[in-house]
Amino acid sequence: MREKVLLSLSGAERKWSENMNVIEERKVSDSMVETVHMVRPNHMNAAGRLFGGMLMQWLDEVAGMVAKRHTRSNVITASVDNLHFIHGAYQGEMVVIIGKVTYVGNSSMEVRVDTYVEHLEDGMRHAINRAYFTMVALDENDKPKRVPRLILETEAEKAEWVAAEKRKEMRMRRKKEGF
Image 1 (cartoon, helix red, strand yellow):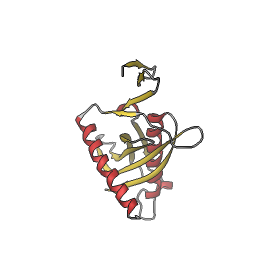
Image 2 (image 1 turned 135 degrees about the horizontal axis):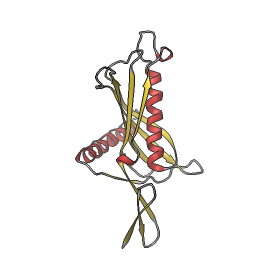
Image 3 (image 1 turned 120 degrees about the horizontal axis):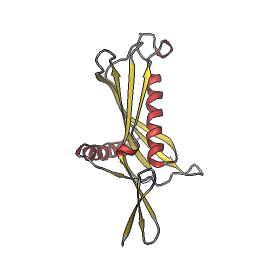
Image 4 (image 1 turned 30 degrees about the vertical axis):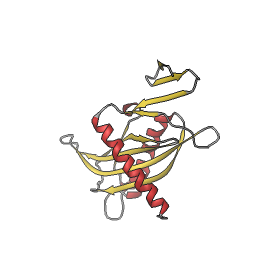
């Protein structure tokens, strides 16, 4: 089957097959999101650190923005895996959150979200959290819809895809076992 490649105005590549089915593809970099938050007194828990629930909200928002950029549609959070708190964040610190698509299935995708504290003195970023979200794309009737394929350009992106396949297998095994 012959395919024609067209570039849209946004730079996303689209392939049109002769039977006119559209296969959309996007690069990891097309949907990457970075946000910055200043930790304020209303974000603190009783121990004087950033409240974990506040960070989870910020992570979910970033994962949703990444997924919306990738799919150009509404999305929902299906699950969160490996939410691992490495270190706390404190009042006055800048929290940097970076999200990117690591894997796509039929209607779902995995989004990796890394969190750092950026020190104002030297600009260095120190990891404080990593999480993996499974996001599902929705059509205009709030039903799952096919997501664009993912173009893997670097060895790191390819390695992340392989790791994501393993995480997906573990999620499916846990689901089967009732966890």
